[in-house]
Length: 371
Image (cartoon, rainbow, N blue to C red; front, side, top):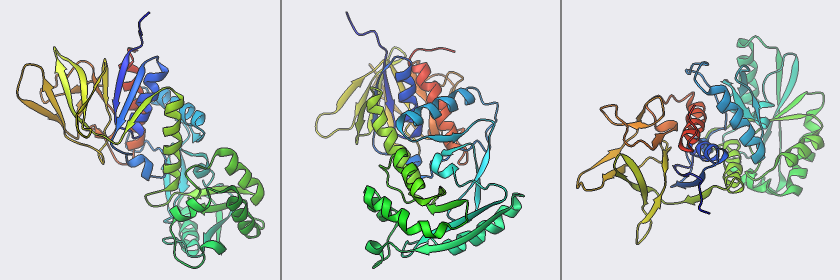
């Protein structure tokens, strides 16, 4: 008996592409994902905001629920909900409004009447615990919340002889014994504080149970401060989702960009990968373009029997069915969908939310679920 599962090709391995691939797989499609590299999500703090986006956005709540289930299954739990916006602190001493955040980042939100110790590590470049605590103390008053922030610094003996980055600490903390050692170093700083805030320094491979064990050893709640890109919080979520793609049955093809889409009789029949030597042809029944803006490439559109070609560009437009449309507002092809930050509706503050909503719905539509 032949394979009746719909074949879906997702172009782009950022947040929109991953969401689209997993959504299509959920709805029964056989999914292949191709990407030339990670998008902006992997470099960010991994937070999701809908600032500038209507809370009445179609499929928003359904897509957010899917995203939370997806990340929980991948081992990177998110906190938050569509009707629960909060403020989380960042390494610059300010607060940002979010809808969702990784659990470790969400833990840093200001709680009225609490006492928080901001812990620094001597030699860590780009971070001053004292300055961050002072700025947070000033910023939290504007939110009308009473929180006492103070600062302290510790040293990691193996790292004390030179200046290092959060990535250096993250690599160090991939080892469980080093996680335990850090807990022992910061535990005396806790005293009577309710929360310990650290910059996002935990390794990209640390699992939820390991972070829970670290919290237990410290003796109070622990939160991570969103750092400037590249932030370990976003990188950790991205890598866990990458692994989860395989578990969900998605075939990943990293490293090579899509060079062209082949069209015939109003449908896209295949994508051409720019691989060394002979170009690789991937056939599919539905195509989702989620290339993002950092990794965007000019993808040629070739039509059978014609010599000329056009190109997909950034600021792409889609119709209500998320089909990519041309300058005449006609579908490029009936089975080619767009999702994520490549779309003209992209806004920086709500970019991750747009990626989740459009990625989820594009995956659903590409798999043949019409709603």
